[in-house]
Image 1 (cartoon, rainbow, N blue to C red):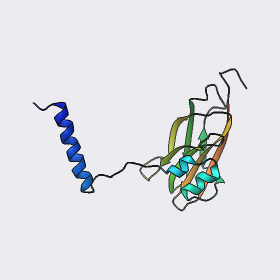
Image 2 (image 1 turned 180 degrees about the vertical axis):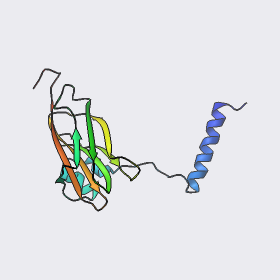
Image 3 (image 1 turned 60 degrees about the vertical axis):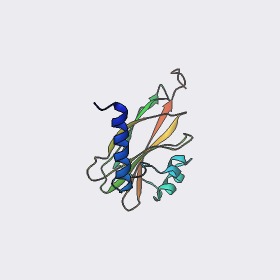
Image 4 (image 1 turned 45 degrees about the vertical axis):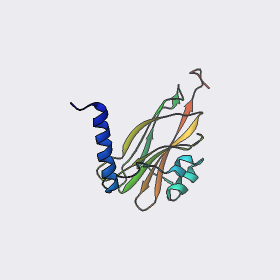
Length: 151
């Protein structure tokens, strides 16, 4: 009978051989560190190599008008634009502006829901970046109440 330890060692050895052969990626980092560390919307666009975003009715952002708990705010981003490669959720007044980045292909419907932490009331953006580097956005103001008391 094979022990759990032996099975794990064998699977790690196989994974190592597959990585060495180039079948598996060496790293699984699928994000742009500079974009996530950016402190403004303009800095995020620059880090991603996109142009200045233009407002569009083909991009939508959903979220509450008033968030009782800023630690868990449900947000949604969607677009009907063709040729979108990324869909972003940005919070203007957060210490790090980019909250989420979703890579989009033709096999993926560009409609995503996530939860974000908002430290204070802020404008929230959904930004769609197309294959040619153009950026389109929708904006919504989300008010955060402190302790659910209003504010």
